[in-house]
Length: 157
View 1 (tube, one colour):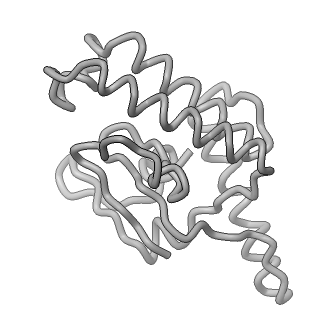
View 2 (view 1 turned 180 degrees about the horizontal axis):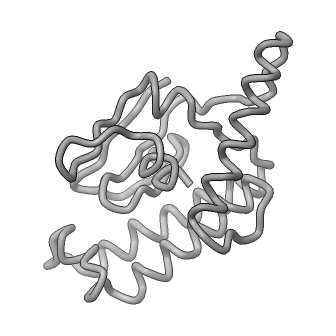
View 3 (view 1 turned 90 degrees about the vertical axis):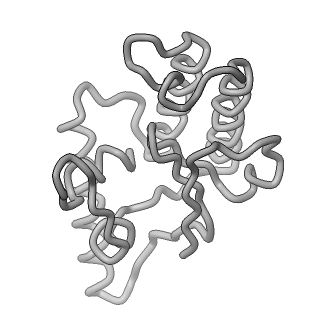
């Protein structure tokens, strides 16, 4: 979800994204998952990290090469994507455009609620966002992670 937002909203410098917290992060609408949904996202995030550990000789570039990505890592990311989609109340998006359209609808609702003085959207306190694949890992999971991703960025709200 977040990477679809990034690819749409971020500025670019050559082929690199220019990530602005005020434009990209602060305007991204986070879901309000149930405890079961949150637990599923945490579980699938840990599966991603465990799958990475299954390939200690591989660099992140090796792991995330679209043509050579290990199948266990790909499956772990697909499971995480499904869990995140479910936390947003959707089972599956057919295209990235549908995903981004849904996020913009949520954003529009968030803005209209803010104008009325009601904002039901709660933002997480801390998330790790892995650079190469865009997976979100909640802080609670971070406490149980055996090894942080090599190229992880930690954002605090």
